Length: 67
Image 1 (cartoon, rainbow, N blue to C red):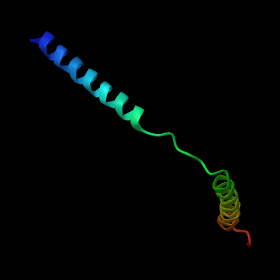
Image 2 (image 1 turned 60 degrees about the horizontal axis):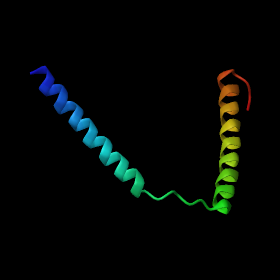
Image 3 (image 1 turned 60 degrees about the vertical axis):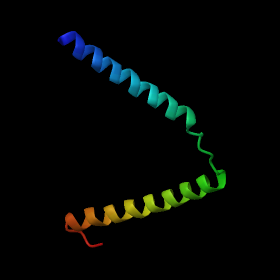
């Protein structure tokens, strides 16, 4: 009984692995637009700076300092 369940489980795992391998072979590699990446990095840095300033303001408010 245990051997049958083990065999069935292994069979399901092997079938799932085969489906994963087939799907990964079909998926094309993403293409990247360097200009888009540059723009996104710049936007990220801008937002990061704003968040750092806001967190600094909150820290000063919590510490009882004037902002």
